[in-house]
Image: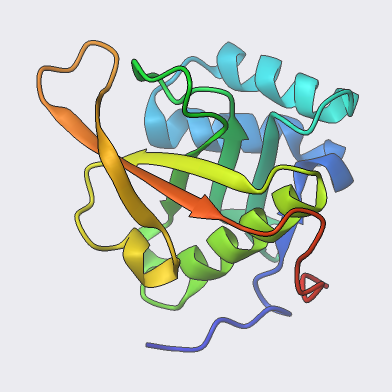
Amino acid sequence: MKAFDMERYPVVKLADRPELKEQAAAWFHEKWGIPLEVYLESMDQCLSGEAPVPQWYAVLEDDRIIAGLGVIENDFHDRKDLTPNVCAVYVEEARRCQGIAGRMLRFVCEDMARRGVGTLYLLTDHTSFYERYGWELLCMVRGDGEEEPSRMYVHHEEEGTGSGDEK
């Protein structure tokens, strides 16, 4: 596995780069098939700065998004008490296995802890991927409209901390 190059692939907060909103919304829409308007509305809320959630993040290669994720209240599941949720985690296939997903997850956990949100949840069908990055299986939950339950993970980070290495 190649080492993640922070200089070549910086993790950026949409809150710090509002000019990326349209590009990011279109990118997430293309990857997940959720209506573009849903992403735009969530990103507008992120940019308003009124609350720590929602937040959106992207990894850039030059000016092209190659990876991203968000933090929203509920990622379309029946456990409304498990909030907020990391969602829409995606790395372009050509950039996988370079540590990008792990770096994004660490960055987001630290950033949210600095915002006063020390516990995050994540719904997935992956069976071992997130454990590599300090996430723990919490329980099984049913995604909206799904027959089979999916895995709900939890991650705890001490609020107000973070390594500060996101430069």
